Length: 558
Image 1 (tube, helix red, strand yellow):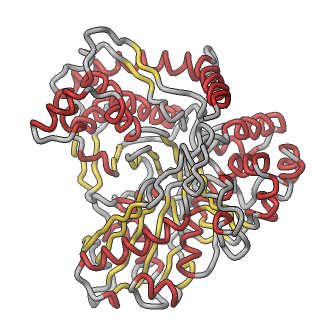
Image 2 (spheres, rainbow, N blue to C red):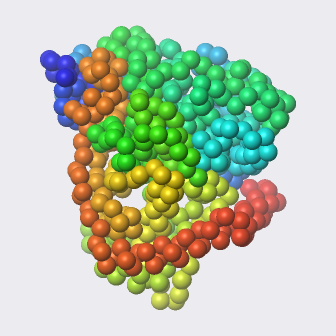
Image 3 (cartoon, rainbow, N blue to C red):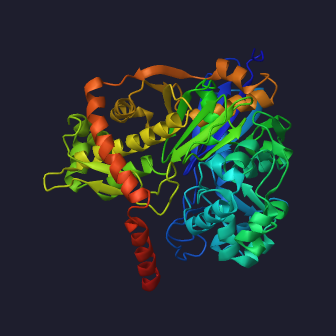
């Protein structure tokens, strides 16, 4: 039962490009107000903002100062939008895109804010989609397999270049002096909570999925030394920290941050969390067998199960990783909305953009309208959704995109539809991997910014041959964080109880159309053939092309 007296909580979702805050009523989850604040520096993937120096390929950095500035702007904006008395707010919680890593001193000062280090790229935040650590992920995987490390199976047999250890090893090799000076290697989800309450806890979700913490232990010192002798103390010296369970209180809001945010000092600050995992309660979904896909620039898939199974290519399985008492599974796709945006930004002719404007539509909406008029398979295309590498089930960020079937008759709307379909095929590959491993997926639930594209949602229902439910909130992760804030503030005894009162879901919003599903089975067979040919070792062409590109960029001085 929620607290009386009109209490509210605040959830803040830190995405790839902005922070989104939502003010939520504790008793029933009503969203009272919201605000979005973009990061001033955005994503630094070509040049370093401080110096203008060129960055190598596959880099993606951010400035942590943007996180605090956007936190303040979004929270204050959401309170104004809600029109409430800020003294009614009893708790705040945050979530973050993961794995996003901040190198800091012992007091939490980011290295990029230390005098003399502001022009060193490795001093900045490495965003989740920083993929330059792939060679170090390869080394981790090869070494773990050779040594028979038991924890590797908990991650589907492969550790991603996006996760904590690969990026940490890259820092050691890329800037040894900076690595030696770094005293804490901090998930951004924990860093922002540290700023709010002055207490540094590692959230159990990030530690388990991104930090290879299984059964209370990280990889051994001997294993780390086998990677590089200078990496032997990585866990003991820079990573290990007390753990905070999801929904617990990390501390209380400091006087300094209370003044900046316009909130009361001393309100509850919840343990940090990951954007995808925190969204499951926002949909009111905590039972086994219900997969939640948070679809935005990328997609993360989370699912609860009653027992642990090893699923090839999953991102991880963690005891209590989503809610206490169940095994939380994670998988993901590294590019979804980013792929559609790439096509619109770089490949759409001027006449198509003009036609969209004449119709009073955005280009995405215009292309979706045209594509919806096509019958399934009419375009004769199949694409691989790897423009940002593959997170699951191949866990290889050296892979790249592919479109097969292009002809002189191919039009932009057809390519756009093929790209939409490719992400649905990638999702089906993930679902099939879980079901084949004995982890049931009975329902597919979608959250995130892409839920508004009706064509995309119907394609997913048809490809997956499952009813598609949609979360009843435009700010799913922020609502999920607000639910955790309510638990941390003592308004509910646990997250599942809070989710029942505060979660939102529109069940079976899209049903599969039988004839479409039959045709998509044929296209999915072609997708799978290409997926296995290019992704499972029959062809190394994509990796070779990446190497050629890197040499060319280095040779040109870019």
